[in-house]
Amino acid sequence: MKKLLFVALVIYALYDNSEKFGFRTSNLPTIIKPFVKSREPIFKESYVAVYGRKTCGFTNLMIKNLKSSNANYYYFDIDDSSVLNVLQTRMAASGISIEHYYLPVVDVNGTLSIRPEFNSVISKYKEKL
Image 1 (tube, rainbow, N blue to C red):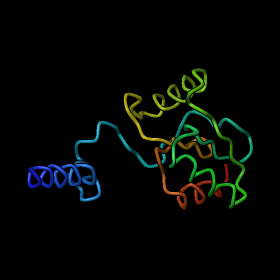
Image 2 (image 1 turned 45 degrees about the vertical axis):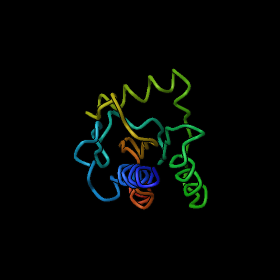
Image 3 (image 1 turned 90 degrees about the vertical axis):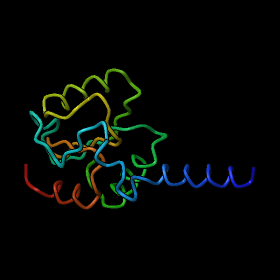
């Protein structure tokens, strides 16, 4: 019985961490693209719009980093259906799948990216509109 539990635990650990080892990345059900040009920027000045959930650790980390960098950022909660509709419309117009995607979705000066690295967000933010 102990051996069976041990084997089950090892299998679960491998499955749970399989993306770290590169086993499941080809099977991701989402299209992850670097920054993709959207239709129009939503603000006239340089900005970062973060679309996510209050309970998402990646969203919270992005906001924390943006606060410390003094970037002009806006947070939009996708649990609000009107915010979700706007986001998905912009994603679809950019050719990004709305069927399944990771959070946060970040709009930097009119370009969208799904869960981008913070440094690439800041680099894009510093580009002129």
